[in-house]
Image (cartoon, rainbow, N blue to C red; front, side, top):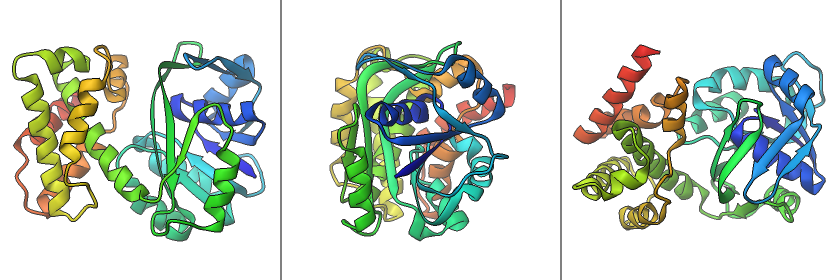
Length: 304
């Protein structure tokens, strides 16, 4: 199976690199600057689960290549439209697109651009970043990628993809309820990124401050109310489950959005908090805490 990874940042670089490590045929679709960096230094993964380096196959949007069988779509949400345009020449009749973006809003854009029949569900749990040399640095042990058919629990193509992912030095998990998994992660990442960016702190000090746990719970409950009002397929006990996860997270854990803000980078506010507020308005749900979180992020964006 010929695999194309859109982007070679912390997520695409890690999972694409692990597939190369296993022996799969992987190519990265990257911008010219990242291409030059990877050609000079190679793809380097520095991980608590084991280091790996290689000289990867690279293409840019101007290169010619036959359509790929599987696309791992790992770009940031604010690059989504540009990445869709760059990807189109490499998508054929039987190409399957597996998005790994945070949130849920990207599904409709991918479906519109490529057809819903080509898009499956996906998400990942991993803490990675690029260092100054462009190496992929993984700072915690979690490296789980979850995937599955959105409308069907089984298909021939999902079995083929599962076979390709099996045996990789990362956790690739097939789900028969991937849509629910995506909504659950959407709720979690929206709250996690929201509180850490609002408080300018890792989750530990927030969690253990006076009133911290209560604030996190209230924001989770607010998000769940919005999703329930909009008939999203979330579990009735998802707030309790997410609170248990919050309790188990390491004291110094930061959200990726918080790390982006510390670097002065673009953030995914519109795709996460912004889109959930849009749903709240459509479904007539008041969301005062989420509005505060979103306003804080809007101020940051204004100052970029």
